[in-house]
Image: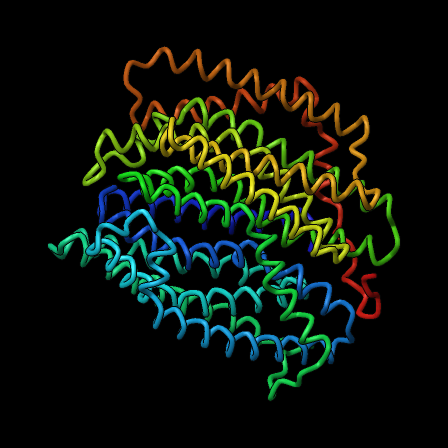
Length: 518
């Protein structure tokens, strides 16, 4: 499959999933608003959704792809089966622990609700109902990693749509045919998320079991050194891959001390995650295998070139996205969320949080892309330490800024954490001698920033024309800003015809089974 076809397939799947997730969250706001029930549901939903996002963006690919590439086709099929079986048992045990200890977990997720026993009890209930999705999403991600290694992307791109699609159907049914209290609506949504996760797993499992020439082999797992290394590396890789999600988990705990703080942070994050999630999915599914190939072949310069190229493309999207979200935060929050139980004060609070988060979007993108090089090298320790540095900065900055600025200060702390994470990753790459952006990359970055500045000026000027920004006006601003940025990008040379031509090149040959990572 050509690079452009595989990129488009993964990209379209990621975009479609984010759009459905967007629609889901708009319906969440309409149905639940931003009060105590919404805070309870979104706090409980945070933990399973964190795992689903991490693994759904290819968080387990850095573990499985290099391990499978070192084995023969027959042995790789056996290793994949062993990994799926062992993870299934471990996840069942974890889910049992969560179901029993949901009360304690609820307190840890939202410590600010400890004085409100009823709301905290709702957090525990919704956690019990929604957490089984973790089993389905993680196993689906493992199966998707195997499919990606084989060069099969269709099922992995489409299966995640089942979760958001199922939740949207549930929300529409609850809003149209039932007159339920808010707490009951949230309970049905929590249960529906687990059922939708089962559908996602079924789609990927069906594609995996087709197998082709190398079907996955299931047996009673044997405790091999390879399987042990997979299990030991799993948690560090997930933590490093999902660093931003962990930062938001910590921010949610702090935001629980402010009324509606959990809800405002959640809805603003979902807007910010639209461009970031796209880059995360593309990096894990497409960039990581490419970097691993260059590392295995000893092509150090080619690895650096591929890394710099990916960073240029990522910032080509992230810089204008961050600027647009900052400028359009208020109309976005109003148009998307202000309806039903979601009031104007909630839209204003969400807008302030979104403005703070938009500042960290480029840094989160840089860290996400550059971390793939560390995964390709097998340097999980460096990747984990960089993620830990970002977490320390997030918690410290959020606690300091929360008191004068409230939830917006917490969001600004997350942005500073993304900056710290990106800086730590760059320092790690410098230790390996792999941070060399070069004159071409720096020039491209300057041109991209100039194009984003032109777009920003245009958006500010156009925004001043509208007295009130409704759906049509917001759509016009978004499309006009995109068109202006595209013209400015070509005019400044941030985007060239050669960039489009390079996408049509055939992707590299599959990883050689006998080529190992050092």
